[in-house]
Image 1: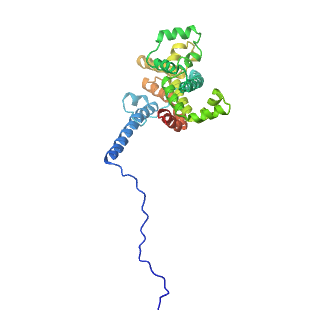
Image 2 (image 1 turned 120 degrees about the horizontal axis):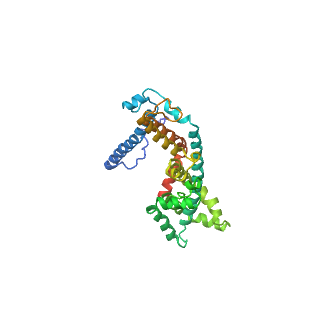
Amino acid sequence: MVSTQPRTQARTRQPAARPRGPRPTRGYRVFQVVNAVVLTGVVVVTLYPFLTIVARSLSDNAYIVAGEVNLVPRGFNLTAYRVVTSDPTFWVSYRNTVFYTVVATLISVVLTTCYAYVLSKRHLRGRTALVGIAVFTMFFTGGLIPNYVLVTSLGLKNTVWAIALPNAINVFNLLVMKAFFESLPVELEEAAAVDGLNTYGTLLRIVLPLSKAMVATMVLFYAVSFWNSWFAAFLYMDRQDLLPVTVYLRNLIAGATDATQTGGGLGSAGDVVQSAATIQSVTIVLTILPILAVYPFIQRYFVSGVMLGAVKG
């Protein structure tokens, strides 16, 4: 008699095997540990001075002089900030800095992009000479006095062009951007030429839309450079109302040092004697604050742009 009951399968279902990649070697694990330790040390070394500066800018002078301020403010005090920001000249200098940075960055990015795009063309006659001229300026300059005579003779003193034009092209940025343009497929430009685009149309409508990360990186590099620059304005600007905030803060540091040494006042707040350390801390914080506010928004472009320009695919 045949049983109508279904057979019970004796098989036991095995769990699906997970795909396994190659196991990291011992040397690679050691590298990961060393890399984590080194990067953590870099972060600590970078953040520690900055946090100390912020704490000192918010601390009372007595604690700063006694050397009791480290990472945490002692005797919370905003007097130094009021001294700096209550001066109308400070805001005029800030406005000048924003104007100089925007104009100089725009000029530098345009010139660097055009020069790098030209150098990326291997069929260009004289390409080697143009690259050599650019690289030559990395190691040799005309000197301070010839540059001053040149800027003065061109009538650029007390203008934004004295800051923007002498440093319009950074050769390192130029070479990075050149390497990025060389990594773009040649077929894209050939197709654009077949469609009737000339060189300028190809650059504006094909190349630049594919280079947003690189252009954003160049904007970051140049903006930080011009924002922190003070010597060119100190050298070529004679009028007080044209000085950028970096020169203003430099003069304020010098005035704070003199006031501390002589026991005198500082600026319009002569009734309060601020230590040089407090004023220096405040100036550093106020100078880098705009860059810190802008940097997080373009950090992703910075990372991808540098990688694209440094590694040729």
